[in-house]
Image (tube, rainbow, N blue to C red; front, side, top):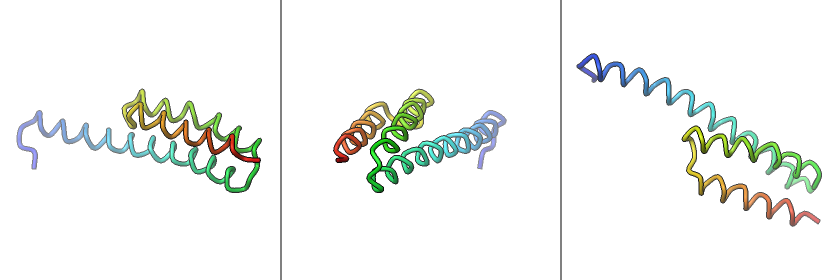
Length: 87
């Protein structure tokens, strides 16, 4: 366990960071799930709207350090391709 005052403070900060990042990750996954569900239902307009809402959330996750830039770009790219493929 942390012994020095500095390490105790770092442990507290880490807990706070972890909670914030966990909430952000969960929020982003919810947006991605909405896109997935719209794609599964075959509703192109709903899927497009859901993707448009999910894209800035994913990129916000990048700026906040929750996801790597390439990971977010890859997810957006693959989802966009799947939305486009809906007949």
